[in-house]
Amino acid sequence: MLLPDKIYLGNSTRPEYLALKFGNRHGLVTGATGTGKTVTLQSIAEGFSAAGVPVFAADIKGDLSGIAAMGKMLDWQTKRATEIGFTDYAASKSPTIFWDLFGKQGHPIRTTISEMGPLLLSRILDLNDTQEGVLNIAFKYADDNGLLILDLKDLRALLVEIAGNSQAISTQYGNVATATVGAVQRQLLVLEQQGGDKFFGEKALDIKDFMRTTYDGKGFVSVLAADELMRAPRLYATFLLWLLSELFEVLPEVGDPDKPRLVFFFDEAHLLFDDAPKALVDKVEQVVKLVRSKGVGVYFVTQNPVDIPDAVLAQLSNRVQHALRAYTPKEQKAVRMAAKSFRPNPDFSTEEVITQLGIGEALVSVLEEKGVPSIVGRTLIRPPSGQVGPLTPEERQAVIASSPVTGMYDEMVDRESAYEVLTKKSEERQAAQAAEDQAAAQAKEAAAREKAERAALPRRSTRQTPVEAAINSFSRTMASSLGRALVRGILGGLTRGR
Image 1: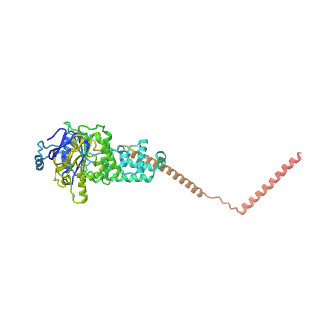
Image 2 (image 1 turned 120 degrees about the vertical axis):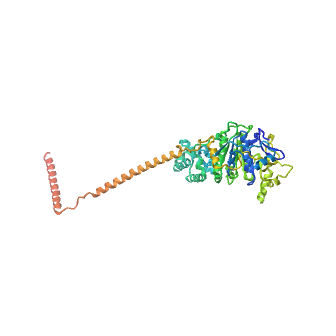
Image 3 (image 1 turned 90 degrees about the vertical axis):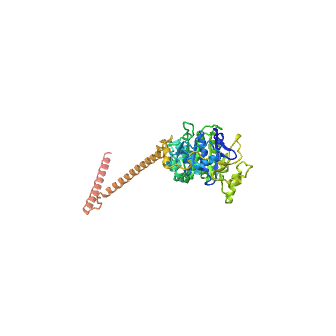
């Protein structure tokens, strides 16, 4: 049943296989709650791992963690294997690394604001053109002044610096309005409140740690704990888009390899697109289109195909459709749309079968030779070989302790960056201003003191007694008489001398 170049999915009227060479053409796993999506995801992930393809999977409910433990061969598993003629079925476990953006149930995942870049960050924050322009100015200003932007506090400090020097900065870089800076700050606050302060920082993730294989050639399954993350949809979207963009930037072109270099599974994919701005959806569509040529496959897992925008849905070639419910007109319309996405099977009505599928049953259509979708088949999905259901906290911690990245990302590094530099600069400015204010106050105080001292000195009286007045009058008279006599004597002498 197991083939070296294919992943066994289950049996319809024939064995259903996903060819590894088409694994990077992306895929979709859908179905109502309780129909078996997570078990199907685990089976496909195990198949890729066994074929030497590293896997990344977001684990919304914690159920996928069991992939790290040996399967227990429960009754329903062995019964299903017998029912579909899966003679190669055996218990196994997949090499696993647990990750967690919050660092609680796995190794932390971080990146820096600089690595995210202004364009991608603007998309995540849903900034308008003017706000995006201010963010670009902030990054340019940081580059020109040698300021590292590593985390959110660096970016906030940088925006404060720009707002405080908006007039000078506007002259050099373009208009910066304080109100616009405030709008960007508010959007950053939303991201921070959802946990962005833990995602942005150092040590930043090396994307190659998602692409590890074991010594015997199995691909590591990186499981992201997302039970808490799903309550922060903006952060989840931020992480997903950054991850895909980073892969696109880092990995070289490989065209269509014999098997993918990496495969992603994003559970509860509707969280990425619910109320998402058009710019974000456009960016996801662009990255999904282009990352295929890097040898990366992206598989979305959600309840209904309508959860995925049409532009993205059109890129998903390998499809597994579990049962959908059709109790309301809206649900009936969704069933019709899902049925039309398959290549028809003349033996049954796809629309009718979608609502009749049992747990563990699915409609399967994958790419066959020359990249043509196969005729849809009503398929019993194979059981996973690993444990079905979550690990205990103790078992999870044991896997974390023995993982190949233990100690690499566990501690956050906060080196000197824009926040520290600008804080020091602000403190120096404040100290200089304080010294100047103190000197001015001291000068003012000295002047006031001098004035007070002069006012306190005893003043000489200008009033004269009668005796003083008589003496002064006599002195003036005598001075005048003497003066006149001297003048007459001098003039008389001159006259006699002629």
